[in-house]
Length: 314
Ligand code: UDP
Image (cartoon, rainbow, N blue to C red; front, side, top):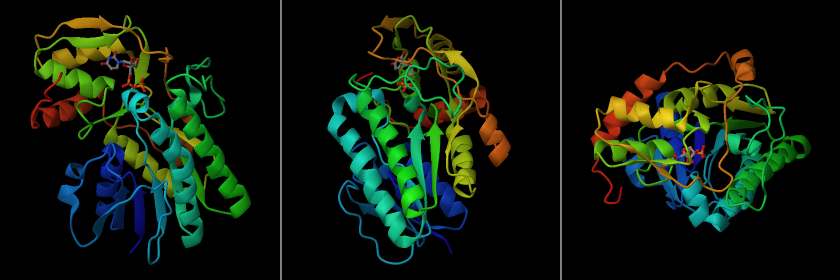
C-alpha cells in the first residue's frame, strides 16, 4: 500500500489531495502548522489510513517508516495572506521546500512541488507556456510568494539534477471549490459570501483583468497524473477558460440569484492584468483536460458556502 505525505494537508488543495489519495488506496499523513489551514478540512478523513501531524515544515521533518510520495503543498496562497504573512510565506517556500526535498531524498520517495502561475508574474506572453520565464517584481508585495516559489522550483530541479530525486513541478493556476477560506481575500471565496448575503461585490480596479479558473477536482486529477509520470520539468495545470473578474462577479450574482451590486475597490499593487494557462503540454503528456465547466463548478462551490455560516465580516 503506497504511503504519502501531504504538506499543507489541512489546507484547501492539500485536504482535497488527501481525500483523493485515500480513495486511491494510499496511506496518507497530512502535515500542517495550521497557519492558514484548519483541521475542519480533514475531520471527515479520520480513519485507519489517515493521520494528521501538526508541524511547521520549515523545521526538520522526522517521519518513521517508509514513504513513497511527498506532495509539497504547504504555503499561504492568497495575496491577502502574503501581505499579512510575508516572512512565513518566504520561509515555507524556501526552508520548507528544502526540508520536504531532504525527506524525499532520505526516503527515496517521489516528490511534487505545488508551484504557481505566479512564477509568470504580470505576464508579457499570453497565454502562458511553461517555457516563459515570467515578469516578476521581486520587491513588490506579491514578490514574497512569487520569488519563494521560483526559488522552490530552482531547488527542486537542483535536487533532481544533483541528488537524483524523482521530482515533478506543477504550476497551478487559479483554482476554486469547496473549503476555500471565506475570508482569505481571493475573488471567488469573497464574491460568493458577499452574494449570498446580498452585500456589495468588491471588484478590484475596473474588473477588466482576466483570470482562468479551474475546479479543484480537475486540478487534483491533473496533479496525480503528473506525479505518476516520468516528466521532471514544470507543467501547467489549470482551466484555460479565461474571463474578466467583472464577468466572474456577474456569474456569481446570477447563480446565487443575489440582489448584490458590484462596487469597485482599488486594484492591489502588481495585480496581474491577464492570466491563462497554455495546457498543451498537460494534454499531450498526461492526457489531461478539465472536465467541470464553470457553471457546474460554481454551483458546487456555492452549495458548499451555503451550508456554512457566513463570515461575520463580509
Ligand atoms: N479580486 C477582486 N475582488 C476581490 C478579490 C479579488 O476583484 O474581492 C480580483 C483581484 O484583484 C485579481 C482577481 O480578482 O485581479 C483574482 O484575485 P485572487 O486573489 O483570487 O487571485 P490572484 O489571481 O490575484 O492570485
